[in-house]
Image 1 (tube, rainbow, N blue to C red):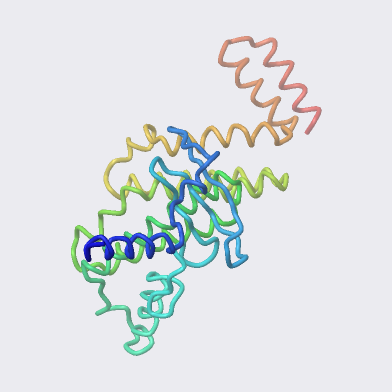
Image 2 (cartoon, rainbow, N blue to C red):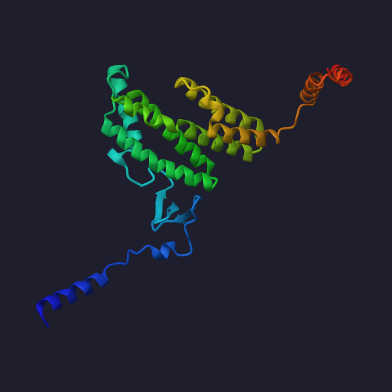
Length: 267
């Protein structure tokens, strides 16, 4: 046998001894469905539950707690946590936040980290783990606030702001879903309205108040608000007052008088 053939044979045998890393068996029976968010919760090899998101060419696997990739940058839960700690230390030393800045590279790293949390809160929403969604969306809003306040470059201060209405919507939707599932309908409605108010302030801050009415995020929250109101018993007085207003508008004064008398009797 020639040396080259012998060497090739040894290489082949060595490769055959390597553990098989082909993920095809993992994906078998879990086909990718375009237009849908395909996620599932599994038990990891370490016994800890994990999230998996099916993609067209494979999958993402995420930790349920801490940073989704399981990394602890600088010994902290996340880069955001590290920078928030640095900010607190700076304020303790100097008595002010002035002089604290984020470089372009640091902002880029924070944006990349925020994408991980985006994938996780999207997956958690599909699985109706609304507590996790509230946690991760609130966390990403803090990223926007951190970069918007302390980034050296204006571009880094603004680039993430385009996503604020969406993140606020998801946060309000998840928080209200918790209250809705607990039959706390007035609280759920207040949470949705607070989210809509935050989005309205966002558009006003950037000089586009008219965009509020066209916002897809606002439409989602308005639709949820309608569903919540259906669960709230209508106050008889409020109902009569609405009927009275409509009677006056159509100039049905006899009906309006009747409704007015009913309201007086209730009073």
